[in-house]
Image 1 (tube, rainbow, N blue to C red):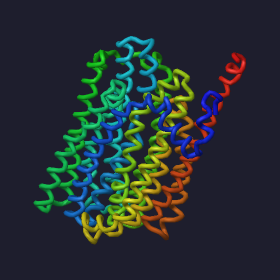
Image 2 (image 1 turned 60 degrees about the vertical axis):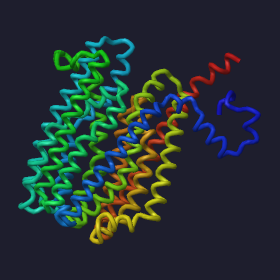
Image 3 (image 1 turned 180 degrees about the vertical axis):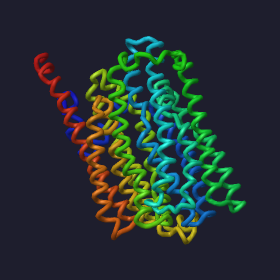
Image 4 (image 1 turned 90 degrees about the vertical axis):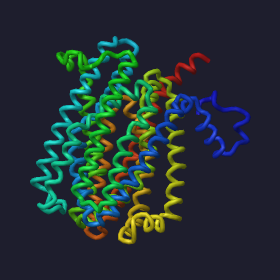
Length: 466
């Protein structure tokens, strides 16, 4: 503790009171755009509710076996997409934040073009990979040849899913309200079409086509809003910039993009490929149950993802200004608030989860409950890691994030292959707990070690001033 932070009033306060005061009244938390967080949370809550209703209709219509087929088709597409898709918004946020002070609008437009080119090339390649894997190797994850061709339908959505550049434009432009509500239209259409499929007792082919159409609409709308945000920020259209010399002009951009993509790829192997593992070990029906448990738990995890969306630019600015105390307060405060949210969700599911699952999905999906409880514990560790992961990226430490992701993913796979033969789908949930706990510990060790080094640099200067 810094000497200036101590005072007479603090002597009579309990440790819990001091912790709460330091978290909730810190300058670091005041730099976070909480109105943006609320916009994102409200928009995400609406999206999550709509998606859950659409999923409920699909599960009710198809029954566990056919719903599991749909889940595995979507999982193949998402795994291939995540393996190759560059999260260009992360390097864009990092580099544009620096260029805002010294660069020109034309130079910033070229940065966005760099990100857009990465997005387009990776989306098209991921689409081709999904088709190839689905047609050649779908049997490895429990799909038969009669269903493997369905990946061709969903691959159309992957090919146009260009999100990195528009996401960076919306985040840096402060368009968090747009970012929050942009999916509502496409997901509302998905819900309406899913309801029509439910009434018509449609098959798995129609449901996959509905999911594909809704995602294509969402991607195109997202891209349009991204370009519009650039125009309102005074940035020229990146498509009018020349692609020549981008690597020379921004030498660290591609390396940062590769590092963050590798980190995302490794995390995908646990958060997307796990469904394929369940399909391989237990078949499509259990894969469907496991996916539903993950989807319900993801409603809590989305809060962490949304907070990371808002705080990453703010943490980047705090770190670039060397505002170490505020930076530290922001990270601790966010972790504390996420812990409260996760404990609340866990208690609610523990008390009312099982009857609500049977009421919503039917008796055939009662097996979701134990999977859901275990997944919430895993999500708690993921939520705790979100602020520290953003902090490391703000510190320009993408390699550290990558190494932690590799270590936690390795722990997940070791645990999964040891536990799933005996525990089935629940073994995958327990493996998530193991990997998530390891990631949370490593992330915290890395950021506090780095923050401690930065704080120690200031101590001699303060001492000499006295």
